[in-house]
Length: 281
Image (tube, rainbow, N blue to C red):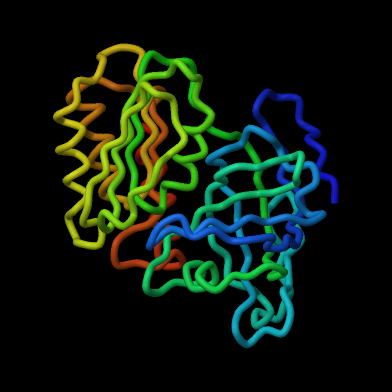
């Protein structure tokens, strides 16, 4: 299925219809991070340069014999009347898309429980999932003197993709909260972008470590751009520090919570949108 971009606005991509894609291979990056490489006709026409863009992955439930996908109209997805056919839907970030080999990479944080984590842990070549998106606008880092990244395991798919595509002379710092040293790995990034790995992400309140680390950095007061993602309190606390203490404006940062401790994605869905709306101001 070819996905033409019919919009004329720069950076805009019209959302295509949901379609099936297939696992080509998997790579265990660390103890708690699994990369899944997808392929298939459903990826033809996927936009290049959309690292960190949000996509929806649709997973067949245990009781379902086949994957049922919705159709997309201007008001949103239309599902079959039989709700028993509806698959599990989870939002993920693009790590990379290789148009030459038609391969989409997504990094999955592996938790003890969770629909997508369980699926990724056992994914094998030939497995099929549904793909929704991407669509709308992709937040791309503007030309800046300094780039600041902050996040946790859930942010590494998008963060890793952006770090790998920064200009070779870019300067900055990435602060990443992970469970432990077993989750440290080499990120493809410019030489002048440093990385600080912090441990203990499975402990409630550990997000404060990220704020403390950033407080100790000598950040420029001008021409700074920040990318913040992961657990809600991490994103909110870092954003407040940058805005209140350093005067960083909303236009100088991308701040999006991906999850909230104690809630699964379905339970967090509505609350997440309220938080995102508040963060835009």
